[in-house]
Image 1 (cartoon, rainbow over the protein chains, first blue to last red):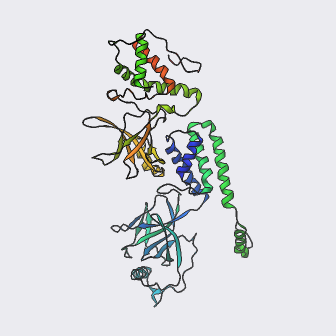
Image 2: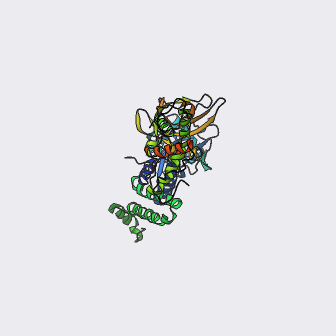
Image 3: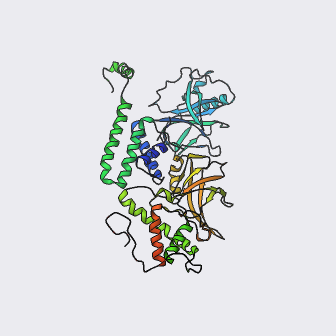
Length: 259
Length: 216
């Protein structure tokens, strides 16, 4: 069952014997703060979306819940040409056979322009390195596309002040920007709260409300929030045996554990 | 009790028995006075009983439920319903509660008209599930209207059920309608009416068992 922030606010209203919606907005406001705090400190929530390109000024408006991107690509004819990725999250290796016909000596701009052209003409790119980019939100749908990793050595875009500014190299007819980004966890519509966070969000709202209404009780509610916060930490940070084994094997050469 | 029943009870009490044809106090003027007293008694009761019962709500039988037709404003194209009176709201209690006529459970949330812009800017209104409604008193060229502006209501809906504390205006009182006040407040209402028409009767009983005289 999907739990939204609205559901949690209703639960709190019942707990407090509220007979009207008078405090609903307050609960939602504190709930959104709680989601942000828990997302920023407790998880690395990423989300993929398709974004429209403003053709007049070659800009793309970033979502309101955007923190930083982990992957950016351009969708052309159902295929994604990746523009950049966060190498702290995706340690890709460069494809071995970059380009055919000695084109690997071309400048990145020329290669990128050629690749865009190929995708527009439905011609397969000459790289044998593709992966599947899953769960890209497009309106109410989730879509999946094949993607070619970024390898140009330059980004062809910059992110500034809530917008992506694209370099006008690639033709953008009927194309979208595909963005995978770290989110604050707040949705454009009703925010969906992970089951694991539900009690912590509820405790956070109780705590914040008490700060305004019953300050003498605030420390009690804060303690309950901290208890819920630690509960999430224990559950999210607990490692499986397989994860521990991988950690040991990956660091065996250095003779020490990273964790 | 209805307006007529309360009016006739008072008339008989003031007349000391049967009411003559030329009795100087008309029923209609009693009805007007009843409507003047209802908000006062409702508020007073709320503060008195709330103080020792710690109850969060207004008495349930002060509410009236009715079905209103949805109108569309010619200028703004906003959808709204007309209320018979401004809602009585005490500390957030008494907010109009709305529901669809065919579906009582889909939520329609009342939002404060002074907050809707902040709620929109902070994206909190998007978090609220279902429809929203907001009270507005509009001054037109000909008359003043009490409106509930509707947002995000199903397009096909033409009627909405409203539950609120209703006060009818003096000119359209139905004397056979129930007086919108809790049963326990009928006696204080009669006492207050009697004191109004018979000023020598100064004694008004304090109904609140809270160790102080709330009628001072």
